[in-house]
Length: 109
Image 1 (cartoon, rainbow, N blue to C red):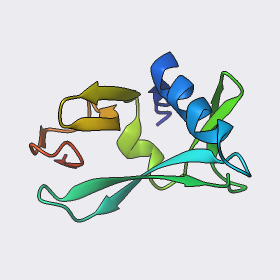
Image 2 (cartoon, one colour; image 1 turned 180 degrees about the vertical axis):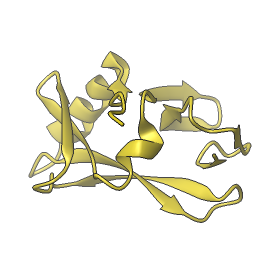
Image 3 (cartoon, rainbow, N blue to C red; image 1 turned 45 degrees about the horizontal axis):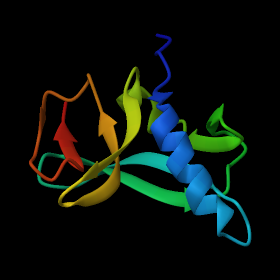
């Protein structure tokens, strides 16, 4: 089954561009799904170099990468950047998650 790749918002690409502006070596934003967290799965979002089998989403000269194992969990998800009172962070709006917890980094399917 072919899944729809996640989308990255302009805001997320813009924030990544800001982060990379001050970095010595610009990096991609890696979005991964791992077992664990309070709902069974959790997101791991970090700066990383793209791997050979990663899906690379490009925009504004920036790259967001997703590994092949995480990809099915992130089908049709939206990777965004939100600035709220509790802090600014990359967020994931995931239509595949049946429930998520308040922290927004953990979900179940």
